[in-house]
Picture: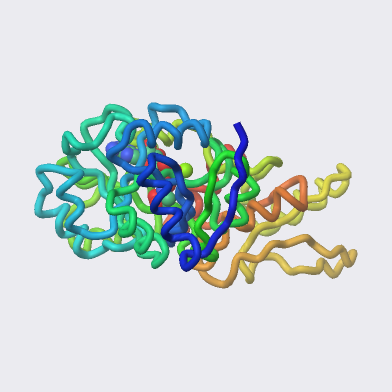
Amino acid sequence: MTMQTKIVSIEQGLDEAAELIKNGDIVVFPTETVYGLGANAFDGNAVRKIFEAKGRPMDNPLIAHIADISWIDKLAVDVSDSAKAVIKAFMPGPITVILKRSKAVPDEVTAGLDTVGIRFPKHNVARQFIKACGVPLAAPSANTSTKISPTSAQHVFEDMKGRIPLILQGGECEVGIESTIVDMTVDVPTILRPGAITADMLVKVLDKVKNFDGNIIVAKAPGMKYKHYAPSCEMVVASSEDKAIFEYGRQVGLQHNPVIIAKNDYVPDQILLNSIRLNVIRLGATDEEAMRNIYAAMHEAQDKYDYIICQDFGDEGLGASIMNRINKASGGKRI
Ligand code: TXA
Ligand code: MG
């Protein structure tokens, strides 16, 4: 089934978008992390349309997006003091808390789990839109299953046109990777997916946090077992600049059209020895900028080139959060 997909500003499209949600339909909206594909979180049939549009397996739960802290009471029960501390410190913002679900939340949202993920986005358009809907919006990232998460309305349009009626325009996402997910239903709060809110930031309001760990994530966040965020061409992580340049030359020798994705201070644009000009997509100077730009860089790279060589951002702080996405995109391939 195909339909007309339009991109509209919040000024022009707010009423129509909210009306679609009230009628049990789906709408794409911007957040500060990535664009989301939303439906009324209390309407199981509406939520099913998200899975259909994305081609997403039904056993992968969705996050419920709210427009006010007080809405958490509609979605969750037994909220601990430590969960309240996290909520107070980091919401609205790029974080999702896992809490015990209330009976009002349908199984389509939680994939039958007895917990629910809740997020209060900071993006102005998201807040206005969810508020106008008057209900929490269940929303995954607005990409078809296994594709790269969208950080602009154009990314969404290219991937999902014909499958969704309306995209609310909200510019480029400031944070650029999905929210940190922290499970607040276990004895030691546990990061299931790293993001812009890091363990170091969380321990400021908690006694202990269990940091991101592959094994735990597989068990607690079912979505992690699927291949995610993959560009359409091959991608590898270079363990050093020398290796990146060597691999680049090897790929050129194989008649490929490679590109390096890296921060500003990584590899020169020009290799002076044989004056090859490198294709490099620059992510900016800092890890924060790299996080903001990484998905857009992958979109650009898969459109213009056929082999991606990516810098290694290390295993600490924001670098580790960025690497989590890059490792999924590259399928763990390193050179
Ligand atoms: O930044 C974000 O979180 C974006 C924007 C749109 O808000 N959303 C997003 O949704 O990334 P999605 O569906 O692409 O990823 C949600 C992840 C999945 O891996 C899912 O398994 C996990 O959250 N998740 C959702 N509810 C959960 C729960 N109750 N327990 C454990 N993991 C959960
Ligand atoms: Mg996603």
